[in-house]
Amino acid sequence: MRVTLALALPVLFMGCAHESDIQIQNPLGASTVGNSQIVKPHDYIENQRGLPRGSVADMAELISADPQQICFGLTMHELDPIDLHEMEVALKTDKAGPNEQARLEPAPVTFASYDGLVPETTVTGEETYCASRNGEGVCLAWRTRPVKSTQMVQGQVKVYEAKGRVCFDNGQLLTANTHQLTLQIKVRRRLGQGAGVVAPFGMWGGGGGSKQTIFRWGLGGSKG
Image (cartoon, rainbow, N blue to C red):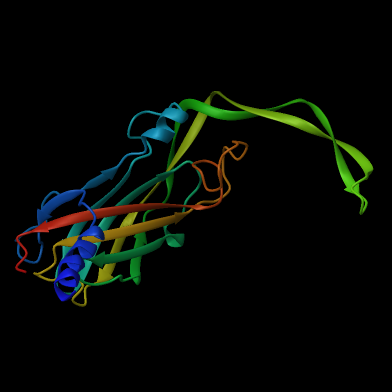
């Protein structure tokens, strides 16, 4: 029984590991950070809204790291107005964390307009429904309501861009023995354009909900 448990534990631990998006040298053992940019594409929404490829991609890069602090550059895109002050940020490694105490230095939010597809809702008719029933299930009052249909038509699509710098106190989070660095970003969505789209709660351009993006750096040259 003891041998079985000893073999099972590494399997469970390996099951929790996630593949890195990019491999770089551990910055605490290298003279420079090097190219560390990670791009997270969103092909589905680009195709759905007829947008240029890469227009709504999210990006993050590790710009500096030392025993005192770790800093990243962020570029986030949304179809709704966004505010980096309202985003939830967490940094963790394969050995420690998460650290959720971040210092944000956002730049002014900008937007670009593209020729794409926007939702258009029209009234196609009306339906009659029961508004009130008695205890036996007999309808006591009938009312009518419009029947609506939403389709995508040619129009201008705004893509909002929020850029900034986010830093964390290191505090032994990143060490020479760290093998992976994970930055988790959750951006709260506001009610914006496209609220008429019939889509699940929190969808792109649907208003409400939040979007989570995770960036992972594998660190080579670590000691342990």
